[in-house]
Length: 423
Ligand code: ASP
Ligand code: MG
Image (tube, rainbow, N blue to C red; front, side):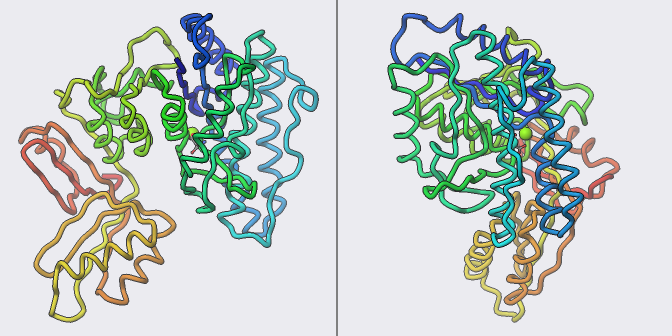
């Protein structure tokens, strides 16, 4: 059967990272039945190297601001970085891999469309390097161009997938008798029917891996990360973390929805639909158990889990007249929220107000403006949402200690605190 592996930016940030991918891929293909069925194979999904996506975002920002010199300098840095990794791996820029010469920026197009054309190049470059390197190391590899296979609409920066067309295209490629055992391709990017590249939203490679797992009826999807697996808290914040070895799809959805940085929230659904287990494993220790998310995972998780969702804004709406009808206002508010692509992390209502906590994205100012037409709107930004699952009164008291709490919602097992950032 097919297996899907996903390598994030941290795992391919330098030449050693790419060599490590080779090591992990070899372990996988040794275990795949060599004389097995046609569906056998390894789909390797790779993100942009290191912080390349952020760097490419800065190129677009600079160009949009008319700062061409700055954009060019940034672009040259990005190219140099890839060239140096290639050289260290013994690959020849220009011969083995031809890197994009010019920045694909067109001032007549919208910012978001340009963003997708430029930012998607991070994954194009990283996958070319990984594929050519594996090939040179004697592995049976093919490079796939997702913009031609994963069909999306043109919702730039958050493109929606056409699953039927994409699945058919990917299965056609996979089921070819001539397909080598390993396919290397990009996470995070797709393309429109008329051939323009799109992106699926930051950190979207996990989602790509899950979609491919679904299309190929994979036996499993594995995300290789720089942590031992799914932990009960962010090790950069909490000193004592524990590994959660097994969890159910629903727990994973809740964790990622609450803001856990383990997996992209959209990742679970395509896997759950086909009962495909998702492994999260450390790329530094490929034989380690890691964590497994599956239908028959053990749940609920029996250690308290701390999840931070950063960069939140709490928006409070109060009706302009006194005839405040909660139900009517709710549908109006959520229409506006949905239309402006806000991501709601918490809702609270009282007799005369409704508050929503949302990710403080670039869409927020326009949404607030729209809400102000109907409501008196106030807001607080620079907030974080802390979700504690499996809380107790003692744990909650400790979490609140020394922090400015703007709002709290607690049930018997779960506490959600909106707190001021940098407290
Ligand atoms: N390279 C993209 C990002 O950094 C996608 C991903 O890593 O999942 O957002
Ligand atoms: Mg990334």
